[in-house]
Image (cartoon, rainbow, N blue to C red; front, side, top):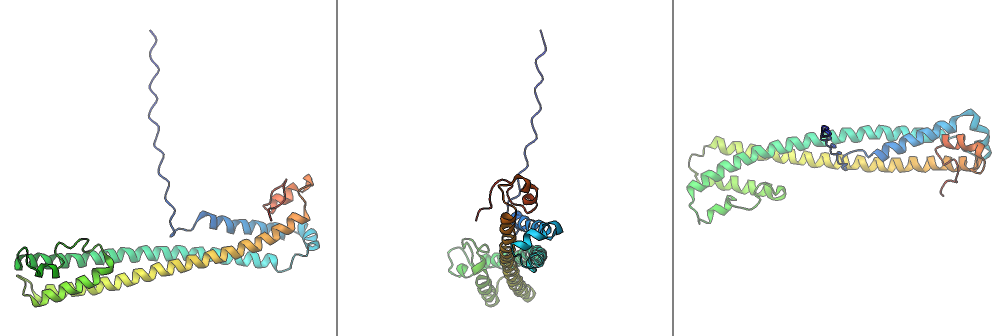
Length: 240
């Protein structure tokens, strides 16, 4: 009897691909910038100068394209920096919120001892309120109401120091929340600026490619290497 074939080992699971978010610089953005640089390099080749001149290529076209591509690359760096700033601001806001919630929960526990179940006073402390603390839009108002209420209700064991700590935690969270929103706005603004810059780069790059398409027609196989250097199809015209 022959031995059975060995069971093949289980294949390694394919790792999940990271999800692309608005906070990332899309690969297509970087690809567009690189494409523009490649086309500019081809247009700068002295061997290509006569044909491009015959097509009336503006003397500033290539320098302008390179300058626009460089500016877009610099903007990419600003977008990445803005993303890091947003992440840092988000972490600070989360930590400040956790600290605030700790103070508010302490006040709520004391209020539970002061007011029995069914007492309408409990509602003023957000006791049993759905999504208390998770609703960031109403957290500021809820916290202010709770701290103010606690200050006048003589809750058991509540020292002035604890009330001051809660007030300071609220102020710190409000500041952190404002900084987070500002960081989010800054990142979105820089992303929009980058999109506009790359659109400009693409338009300038395409003008040069259209000239190359005319200067080196796809109908002549000898033009394939040059056409490829301009990143246009070797055997068909550029889509217009």
